[in-house]
Length: 174
Image (cartoon, rainbow, N blue to C red):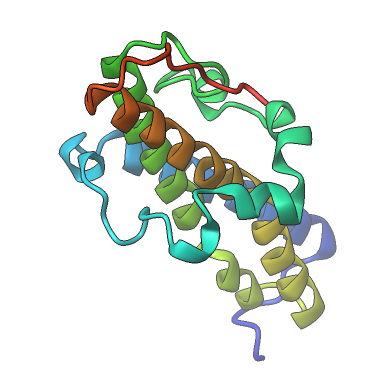
């Protein structure tokens, strides 16, 4: 692939770090400023697929329960947004808010990956491929955690709203 320009190695490294920072912050700012109604419905992008087995596939394949608590919470990093590391409360309205914000988080991570091919414009091809790998490694765990948690929370909401009062609903925090 033809590079658009060839800066020095030091400038390239600085440009790479700055570009990732700008791309990540742009994705965060973009999604934080989108109205909640964009995330209120079960849009095809966020819908749990049958093969995901209500999110369980993510634990079976990636053991998500063993590492998801170690992921950074973007709301804490930017000082704005909804903290998803721990449920704020367990009443239905708060659970619904969690679902909405998990959709926002998932979109944020998809958007953060999109600019990765731009690194080919000023980096050697091997670095461009490395940057695509970085984009996947930095964002896929967060997407996996959202896709694991959301179906479980939706199931809990549905259980509560269906009138099932046989036993109190609990959340397995694992």
